[in-house]
Picture 1 (cartoon, rainbow, N blue to C red):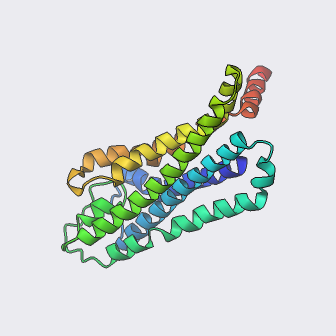
Picture 2 (cartoon, one colour):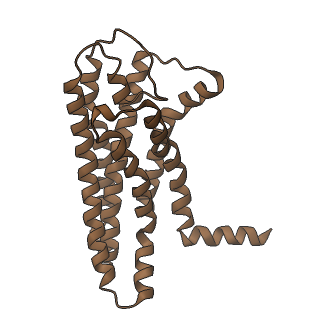
Picture 3 (cartoon, rainbow, N blue to C red):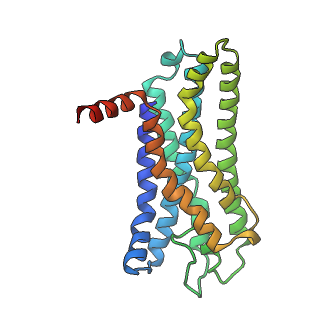
Amino acid sequence: MYFFVSNLSILDMSYTMVILPKMLAKLSMGLDRIPCSSCFFQMYFFFSLGVAECLLLAMMAYDRYLAISSPLHYHTIMTKHLCIVLCLGSWVGGFICPITALVLVFRLPFCGPNIIYHYYCDHPPLLKLACTDTTLNVIIGSSLSAGVLSVTFLLIVMSYVKILLTIFSISSREGRQKTFSTCASHFLVVSLFFLPLFFMYIRPTASYSSEVDSLVALLYTVLTPMMNPMIYSLRNNDIKEAFKKKILSK
């Protein structure tokens, strides 16, 4: 679990660093210009890291399923080698998935205006700047987003269905609560991360709104990465005990 959480932390820091420095420069110093090449790279890395996090959260759901449904065989199934393969697959899959959409956007002609009504270079607002038909781009982008989000979310749901079935088979109430608490942090992180993404990327083009999109984007680009360490720390008994000892020692 700690190996997956450490990868999640790196992902959160990485895709936040892709956006926040430029956003802070704009808000604090009014530096709101970005070169075209930097805009494309920002979009690519943001999407790649976002897809990698979706895949990693699905892998973490599978890890929790094994830990709860097959606790005696957990260490023989979830070996160190398998953990590395799953995490590496999440990173590689994340960086491969958005290439098609990025290439299609890169080939579009942009003849003005050159103002993006968003605080980072996202796919929908960037398509609005193109001076040609972007139907193919919308279809490809929406299909990739819907595919990644739907498949990973479905895998997470399937894992939690099996987890709940296992929990309901436990006779004692205390045992059910203790078992569910082992995956409560992951469940909360998944909810905070996926709900805004579904709203942002799986909907008709006509419903795009710059103001609403910017507000919703803050949830998964700033709020969720900020909340993840707190969620996992407060749910961890070792960290809570260390925190109590630190407070009592003063």
